[in-house]
Length: 390
Image (cartoon, rainbow, N blue to C red; front, side, top):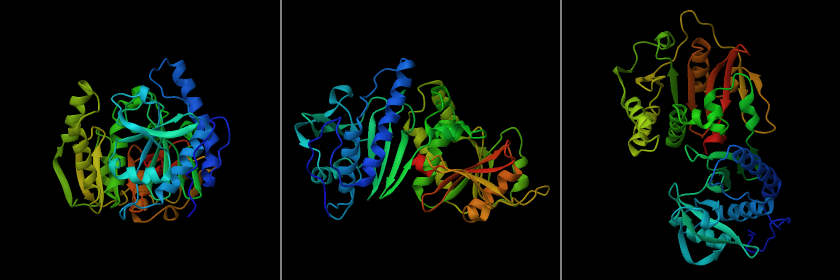
C-alpha cells in the first residue's frame, strides 16, 4: 500500500496527497471554520484556535487516513489529532524533540493516546507539520481529526464555550464523504435535540437538559447492543396506552438518580462530574435490554424492557419522513418498514400515537435515529443522526 511520508507543504498551495477524499473535502472544511470563527468573533468569544488552511487540512487527513489502515502489534490505531499551537493550550505535554507528522510516527504513537480526551498536538513549522506533544485541553473551534476505526475519520471541533460534545463537521469512510448540513437544523419541525447535536443551538440551550439527551444518545450507541429510549412528558401518563401490559420491568417509584444529580450540578458547577457520567451510562445500559426504556422529561426512569403496542384509539403508522443532516441528502417519505427493523417500526408507531414524546433508537450496526412528531408535515419524522454522534 502506498503511503505518504513526504510532508513539506505550503499553507496556500495544493499538497500532493494520495487519499482522494482529503482533497475533495478540505476546502469545505476550511470554509466551515472561517464561518464559525467569524460568528464567534462577533459574539466576542475568546481563546479560539487558528483557522486551518485547506492545504493543511488535506495533508492531515491524507496522512492520518493511511495511518488508520496500519496495525501496530496486531491492533489498529485510534488517534485524535488537534491542529493547534502549543502556546494556545493549557498544560501541554511537550516532547523534547518535535516529531515529523508521518504515518509511521502516528502508528507508533497511537497506543499512548488512544484513550478518550487525549489529542496529539500538530503544528506547522517551516512549512512542515510536526507533532509537538499531547494535550487534554484545546481552545474553542480547534480543528480535530479523530480515527474511529480503520478508514473511518471524523472531522470535528470543540464548541466555542467549551461545554458538551464536540461538533462534527464531516465523516469520511473510505471513498464515502458525509459533510454535515448545518442548515438542516433550520427546517420546520426539527427537534431542539438535533440542533444541539449539530452545534447550532445557542449556548444557553446546550447547558440545559438537552445536554443529557445528547450524552444518553452517545452512551446508547456506544454499548453496541441496540435499544430504544422513550422520553415522555412528566405531566401525564398517556404513554402507557401505547405500551403492552404488564410491563416486564416497571420501576416503582420512579428512579430519580439522574434527575437528582443533574439538578444538583445545574445549580453548582455545570455538567462536569463523574457522577453524572456514571448515572448516564447506568441508564443507557438499561436500553440494551429487549424492549424500550422509558424516562420522563424530568429524567426519572419509569420502566425498561417495555413492549410497544398501538394505543386503543390509535391507527397504524403508514408513512414517515426520513431525514439526515448531510449535504446532498434530501428528506423522503417512506413506509416505516423501509426505514429499519422492529425497533424502528415500534418507535415510529409510538410517536404516531404519542405526539408529545420522542424516541431515540440505536441499532447494533451503529445507526442512530431520533423519532419525533412533525406537526407541519402531519407525520412522524425520523432523523438519522449517527454522523453527529461519532
